[in-house]
Amino acid sequence: MGRTLENKQQIVDELKGLLGEAELALVLDFKGLSIKEMTDLRTRLQASNGVCKVTKNTLMRRAIDGNSAWSDLDSLLTGTNAFVLVKGDVGGAVKAVQSFQKDTKKSETKGGLFEGKLLSQSDIKAIGDLPSKEVLMAQIAGAINAVATKLAVGINEVPSGLARALQQHADGKGQAS
Image 1 (cartoon, rainbow, N blue to C red):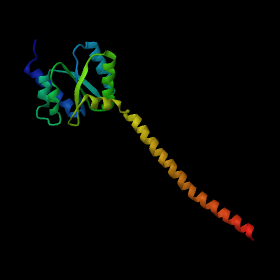
Image 2: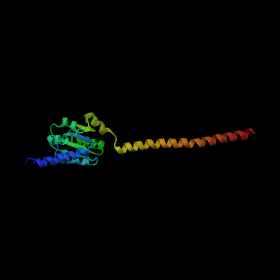
Image 3: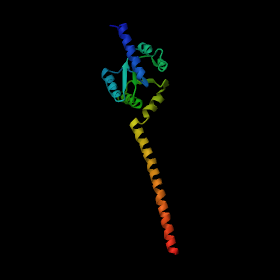
Image 4: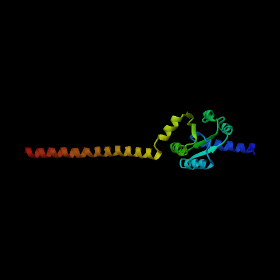
């Protein structure tokens, strides 16, 4: 039984809502994936605030129609597609998709859209290779801590150096008299 017009409009509205919050959209060819495998992908995406939606290309076209931020997605809407929409940890979501594809040896990424720009396969791979947000924050904190330590040692060295110079001067005067 086909979908009713009202049902299709609900799907389009849901997609518009998800796209409104999303930072990244990936288009996957899901041909050959079982329901169990799709559930596995959806589970992996939850940690990075990603959702995977399978819908007809015509409904996705209606959802992006008139939205300039997502209009370039239209060029990827051919064949059997699953749409991964991410509103949080973009790198984590891409890693989850790549890990899923590596484990199942099925499904290919057709492309993606991030901040209004179409992403190539190499762009998506580069995003997946980035360290996680937590690792980057730890690296920044370590760099800031190193600078603060060097600054503290440098500031501490000024009075110590002055005290040594005064002591040497006093010792030198004491010997000369």
